[in-house]
Length: 230
Ligand SMILES: NC(=O)C1=CN([C@@H]2O[C@H](COP(=O)(O)OP(=O)(O)OC[C@H]3O[C@@H](n4cnc5c(N)ncnc54)[C@H](O)[C@@H]3O)[C@@H](O)[C@H]2O)C=CC1
Ligand SMILES: O=C(O)[C@@H]1CCC=N1
Image 1 (cartoon, rainbow, N blue to C red):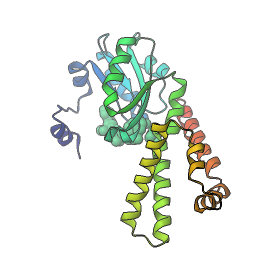
Image 2: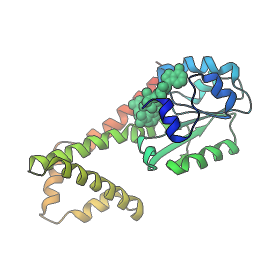
Image 3: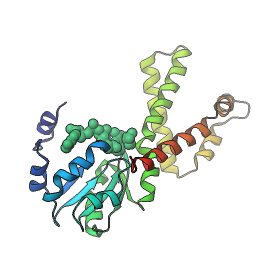
């Protein structure tokens, strides 16, 4: 769906002119792909004033870079969301630049809280959050796909297997959040001695699932860190 039709559906005004956005808005969210951002910052820089609050959700682009490419003292915040914000179940963290104060941080937090969990963190956590959650949603989809394919292999229809895989992830996540228990404790609760689960977990350990997922989080975090140097 194009920006114009999405705008109509949401009741928003849209434009292809970035300077018009700066003229008409005080809170501006930069959400381009990383390689496009420097050009956009160069374009908008002359129009950015002290009344603007600039939020970037571009992976790997630091507050230092944003502040360097915008006028001195600009109120800048760096945000990292994830895809489930679309269904109000996102996990977001943000950090404020030196020009942004409590007012701007509260504004952003209040605005985004309707999209899910939103916490202010030191900037050094943002690349880690990217590896854990921004990109992490994709690892979970891979796991969901594998769960469902296992069931298909054993004879269940694909659509049903996919719905049950999704509900399994949702239920497991809800239990973790609502009980506050460590996942190892919850996992232990499911393992009957000599039962089905421990046989399956043994296979996952043989495939080094835990080490592989830890490596994935590390790789994405390091990639986010190195994108600042690209
Ligand atoms: N997709 C995800 O799950 C997440 C993405 N991000 C970050 O969000 C950013 C955008 O990613 P996506 O939404 O996936 O990409 P996308 O391709 O869907 O969105 C990029 C948008 O930038 C616009 N755009 C392109 N050139 C422009 C310009 N010169 N001026 C103004 N707007 C321009 C495009 O029209 C498009 O709407 C990336 O920097 C990514 O790191 C962050 C967290 C999660
Ligand atoms: O893959 C990416 O670079 C972005 C950042 C988090 C999710 N997608």
